[in-house]
Amino acid sequence: MTKIKLCGLSRPEDIEAANALAPACIGFVFAKKSRRYISPEKAGCLKQMLSANIQAVGVFVQEKPEVIAALLNAGIIDAAQLHGGESDDFIRQLRALSQKPLLQAFSIKTPSDVDAARESLADLILLDSGTGGTGTAFDWRLLENIRRPYFLAGGLTPQNVGDAIRLCRPYGVDVSSGVETNGKKDIQKMAAFTAAVRKEDRL
Image 1 (tube, rainbow, N blue to C red):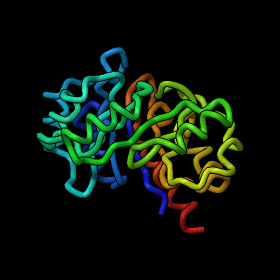
Image 2: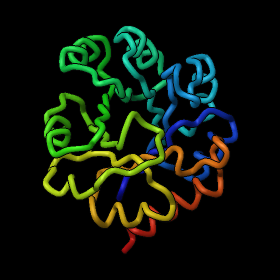
Image 3: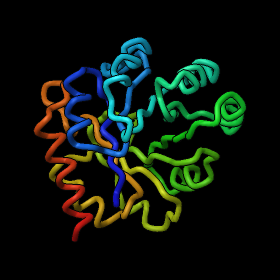
């Protein structure tokens, strides 16, 4: 079954929708330059509302390992997603501070980007079209020869996620702007996205 990650949740109603739709995980964005940024305090409150069966992933861009580890070890998030081109040494430092799962995001534009992602020390990789939340897709054909499990992100919508799963067979799919209306999460679009993924899995 394709894992579903609904990213950029920031309101109680977003969490209520996620609890009803039961994705594998949701994402809290801790990058302050993002319009989806939420504070650790707010994330903690939302995490208390979240179903125990859904993992919360914190999204970070060039944050200090100590800050990420503190949120992981406090249980505010269950995993960390690194979106700032972090080095192998950074991942090692973070692993020394917390044993929670790590995802590393890569912007895919060329075959060499895929090669770099394949060599990541993180537990899982996420392949995106840019810095995240751009709403644009990359050339999925670049992923034809990758054998490592990955989350596919970038420009996914309820309309195209079925095609993406058929072509790429990813471990999981990650969506943010594709389930928004006027910059806010749209419950109907979230439901349509999860339904499209599960329909494809049944085929």
